[in-house]
Length: 217
Ligand SMILES: [Cu+2]
Image: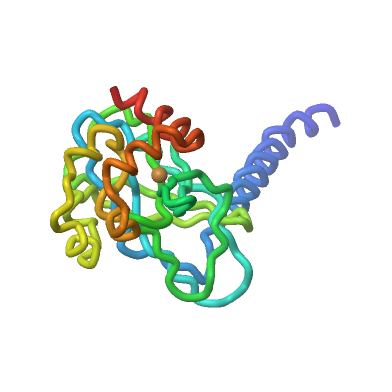
């Protein structure tokens, strides 16, 4: 009897290992009813260790589902979901815990919601491809191949138009990882000098930016 028990043990162990593997696979199911398109990463501005990743999440139905987190392990372990909001005449970029998806196109682009990549170890080269994985509120996840593209390539045409006459240099100095074109689009009536001034006074923004900027220097 003892011998039989010993013989059975490796088999039993294998069964356990398989069960565990299956459970793990089941835990990270691919998200259903969601399609990821136009996945891209903006090439970081020289010296900046932060940049944005953009895409459109196409949701096929209206079942409740939120984007919980994003991972881009081949670029950085520090990834956040950000929103851009206008508050008291100042454009702010801040982290959000989750993004509720609506049926149809959920667009993450310059000037709006975006995936923030921070504390990057090395610069990105245009044309490089990195796997972007999004994790959703139901525990499922979905990946796409994100290609590194130039700032120009990722700036929506409408914004490019609005950027005419804008002085980039002014903003670049203080806001290396922010998207200039987007802000101009949303802040047509603002003077740049004012903005710089306001942002310095703004506690949240200062905290947010200085966090990124320290690493960028
Ligand atoms: Cu951001």
